[in-house]
Image (tube, rainbow, N blue to C red):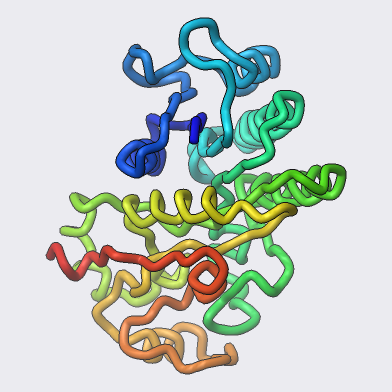
Length: 281
């Protein structure tokens, strides 16, 4: 496929671009940051004219796309003022989705976030492991935008029965060089409770994007994307019992199994994490 990737210079974006190219797809990177070259186009996603122009065709660069992977955003809460986070991320996502519709691109995969599940879980989750079945619980402006983006995608897919939009609720993205810090997390079980001790290796994040592009069923759907294990050496059952003693555990989680359920992504997309921090520390 010919695929446009926004936010290609980010932590996840770099892995996604590499993974798509390794799988044989042609990729054009759309970002404000990055090295000039035939595979890169500098644009501001907040400017709808630039976005729709880029997706419709850019002279010698391309004549259209089969799919768009939208990762471009202020990547976390607290990095900029709340109003800037809202305006930047919401505007960018609307522009990308609407430009895809105008350009006739029917296959969109984009980065939603684990934050819509209720992070930092100062209010405990409704049950464990958490999954996609309970309503969103945004607790920050960043998370609120991610929730609104999912609502936007739902309605756009309703308007166009041929449109496929897949939201991947990524956990905290990690590269192999980040793993040296992980053993220190065991000293305080509450230090990483904010996302239920979850993470996702960037290479597995790229795998999830590839699987979602290949699946691309009409309509809107959402999937939690996380590693198969936690960041901790303590068992997941022990962590849940100590930090969330009143929360119902719906099914047994063996050993260090993730408390961010990836069952749906496994079942529907064929996603299967291949990387663990335990292999590199």
